[in-house]
Amino acid sequence: MSVKNLQAIPFNHPYISQNELKYLTEALNGRGTSGDGPFTHRASELLERMTGANRALLTTSCTHALEMAALLLDLRPGDEVIMPSFTFVSTANAFALRGAVPVFLDCRPDTLNLDERLVEAAITRRTKAVVVVHYAGVACEMDRIGAIARRHGLAVVEDNAHGLGGSYRGRPLGSFGDMAAQSFHATKNVQCGEGGALLLNDPGLVARAEVIREKGTNRSQFFRGQVDKYRWVDIGSSYLPSDLLAAQLTAQLESFDVIQARRLAVWNAYHAELADWAAANEVAQPVVPDGCVHPAHLYYLLLPDLANRQALIAHLSERGVQATFHYQSLHTAPAGMRYGRVAAGGCPVTEQAADRLVRLPLFADLDGEGTARVIDAVRSYGVV
Image 1 (cartoon, rainbow, N blue to C red):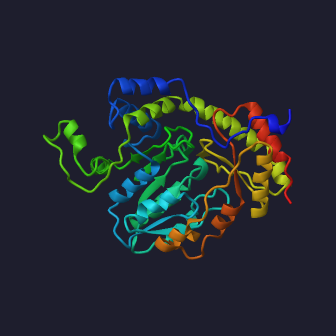
Image 2 (cartoon, rainbow, N blue to C red):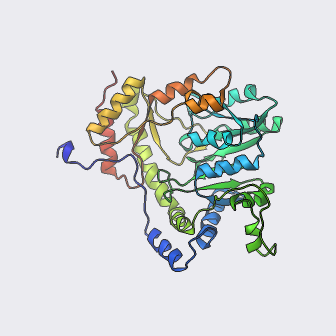
């Protein structure tokens, strides 16, 4: 069969278990479609068990979870927040919205995570927090970053959008920071189309986080019978998702082991079957350091240069395989230059990675035949 007659392999395809429709119907029939309904509580409890969080508060997106984190840190204009330049815009936007200055650091050349060796030199008297991003679900060096933060009295926030199910030295990702933000966007391992969660590891943050999520009111306390009426008590916004989204997310979280097993099978096949090709073409594969367990969120290749990156994406497209690049450096973006600053030494590794990286299709429904097609398509490309 010719390539033209084969069904194209998309970059992503959300997994659907047998229970999403059932739970959505239950939520509709129960007429509990607003937030903090039965499925919100079920999904939150599942997340707390998976991550060890003191509390997990569902949000409408990972972006909103990060915005809540910025509010909980009481950031003021001119405060600084250290973070990687190699990340999604929401990581910086959430803190810039409070008037804080994102301070962009370079990433490590092996894992593409925040380079922990650069953190201490970037701290000033204005620094309030360090935000880590576990790229591809591979953990940052949390022991060293945590020690630096404690030494300087800084908060740690984990952008754990990629990391649910990953771990560092036996501890779940999302359990290291004062807070952690999760994503349940359609591209994530478990998803509800759009959604997120704020994990609270510091119990002292829980009460205020509930208020911020409920438009600045003590509505949660009211429904628990702790106050006789709910009132506006703090700043906040509408970060609470519908119980319909929570119903879908509950089904996804209950299917987590199945999803992970399928994704890991694809990731492991790519890693093993492309090793010889990568070595022969001077292409770098993902690195997973000792002590790190990753959740197979994405599989990437680092081509020698931008021209080969673009050529490989086009080559795969011609063979019915959709691949894509990833983050562009935040420190070189127009808004990044306006609202943030780059740490001394710049971010040369980040700039190179942004130009060289290709992500391959990876989703739970990608079967062995499809995985083999992707592998064969990659192998048929020769680096120029």
